[in-house]
Structures are given as C-alpha cells and as structure tokens.
Image (cartoon, rainbow, N blue to C red; front, side, top):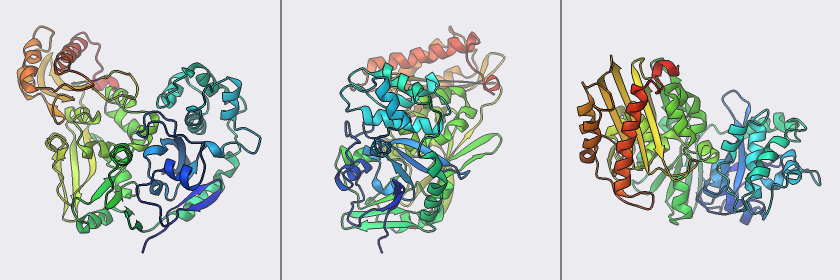
Length: 485
C-alpha cells in the first residue's frame, strides 16, 4: 500500500498528496502545489541557483544540519523525514530575517530574479557558520549566478547578516524541530506509488538488495543525490517505472577510517566526505572544492559519480590514481574490484542486474608518494572539466618505483595512461627524462572534440600537465603524502 511522504515546513508536518508523481521536483511542488512562488526557476539543471532552498535533517550527532540545495533537481519525495526552508518562510510578518535585512541595507538586489536563491544560500551559510569568512562565503555563493553583476554588495550582505549575532527566530524552535523530525523517522522502507510510478526508499543494504532483485531490470533508476538523474527528468523528460532512493540506506552513509585506508559509503555526499578526502591528499580536496557548487556538493555523492560512469566525472581519475577499489553488493553477496576495471565503455559499467555500488575504499598514500590532481575547465568554479589529470608516483631516491597516471575527458571512460606509466617506471623523474612518457600519451589516448575542448587541446593539455607535475616534484614544490599529514 502506498505510503505518504511527510516533511516539516513552517513548523507543521506537510503530507504530500497521493497523486504527486514520483518525478515531481521540489521546485515544481512549491510553485504548483503549495503556491509558494518565491523560489524561481532559471536553468532547471542545478547551475544558476535561483531555486535554492535549505533542507534540514538530524546529523549523526543528533544536531540539525542545514544544507542549501537546488530545488529544481531535487525530487519532493527526497524530503521525506526532513525540514524544508524557502525564501517565503524567512520573514516574520513585516520583520525581515537578518539575511534579508542585510541584502536590503547593502543594496544586494537589482532585477531580483536571482535574489531568492542568493538569500537562501546565505541563510544556509548563516545556519552553519559563526561568522563570515571571505573564502568560504565565496564558495557558498559560487553556485548562484547574478546577471546584473551584483556580487560585491551580496558579499557585503553575507558579512553584515551577523551584525545581530546568530540567534534568528528559528534558533528557539530547533529543539521542537528535532522532535518533529524524530517523529517522522521510518523504521521500514518508504513506498510511495502512483499510476505513473513508484518512489522506493529502503532503509538497509539488505532491503535494497532484495528490492533490486525483484524489480524488473531496466525499468528503475537508482537515485543518490539527483545531481545528474534530476536532469534526466527536467531536460530529457524521461519517466522511470520506479525510483530507488539510496539516501536512507544506513550502511551507505558510513565513513570508516581503517587506518591505512578510508572506506566511503556510496550514499555519502561530497560535503560529508570532504574531511576524509582531505586526509587522503590535499590535492584531492582542492579538486573536490571545484566539483560543482555548494548546493551540488550538498546533494551529490561520490558513489553516484562513480556509478553514473561519465567519462568526465571529476572524482574518478583521482580515485583511480590512488588505487581505489569498489565494493559491489547484491542479494547474492558482495565482492570487490579495482575502480579502473569498473568502466567498460562510454556510460557502461560492470554493474550486473541487481547490483549496486556499496562503497569505495582508498589507500592513504605512503611517505614516498607524490600526488598531483589538476582540473582544467573554462571557469574555476562549477564547471565541467575539459581535462582532469591525476598522478600518483612512488619515488625512491628520485627514481619512479611505481606510477599511476589517470585522466578524465581523454576517452570514453576515465582511464589510466598505461604506456606512459611503463616508460616512467624505473626512470628518474626529471623534466628531461619525462619527455618520452609525455610523447607516448598520444598513443594512450585519442581524445575527441566537443563544445568544451578540441582533441588537439586535450592532448596538449594532458601532456603539459604531466610536465607541470614533474617540475613541481623535481623542484620540491609538490606536496608529498608525508608533508600533507
């Protein structure tokens, strides 16, 4: 029997009507069903930020987590058991929220179309930071585009919103909200079905495995953060028979530090995985900071990026270079495989019917390791890579003991440069001796041309990035794993 989806808004439990399709986005639900039109649709693909809302839930420590997300690619059923804040909710009658008041006083709004999204990104920042820091504030707003070039006063508003402290009108209500969310917690799988299809949210890995075993192959989507799947609906107008949501599977939300390696559950968001990724290597963390916006990192997952199989997924080359392995699970059991063997062809992976990615495990680089991860894109923030290069060398007295060179954007899948690796191994890693490996990259890859870059640019860029890494290592400017710790 179909179960109702419930979430908290304005202090009340909202029950989603039984006829709401399983692919309806939060933005569409707000505007068409609740008639709350403050949130705007700009791009409908998670780029412009005009639709930004804040979702709150209880973290592992029981405290509320406030996360800014894109409502245009978030399905309303993903709100089950959570709290939703929109720009329509912030003011208390005629009294503006400190974020709104700061925007007014700094003249942070011009045409006004982007303003609701900026306000909600600032609200998310306000609820998670004690004061404004220039770098993190810019990161928080990188996913919000303003065509009127009003960024300076908006940044000023981000600083001014703390003038009265952080005790906004929602602070005294947090204990009551935690209690409400606790009352909405489910002990078994959510099954919300309509004639158009079903939204299924299992609670355990075994429940997920059993569900995938009995569902018809090819008729269901596995959904983690929705940062790609959401576009299948909004841009491609596809409608699956069922959506299997992984965001409530407890085992997939775990991060386990095994000492020499870190295991990250497939359902862990980039935001939650960031500190663990930084432990692996600062270069990896710097790249993740450029992987989408705050809204995207608050929703998107490492496991989803892998399972999606995109040749330009930013995390895969870094993980391959670091020798990551995947745990794949099904009703029949689980097994592990090297990540590099998971990608078979363009958008085709080794996942079998009924299988899902459970976790990714990455070894921590040793003291003789040198790691370099470089992303080239037209914009620094929130842009798709033209080329992503990830290098991991183990050096002994300047000689390459082992080499792993991985690239994204150079082939139909993320892949290693095997011929270049072979030429490097056993050689000194100097600018002169690296040139044969640089040249042989043309045999490892035959890149394609598209709107992001030409094939010629991609190959030349990949070669120059290897040269750059060599110069940094040989000059002592790279960060070794030992120094990173």
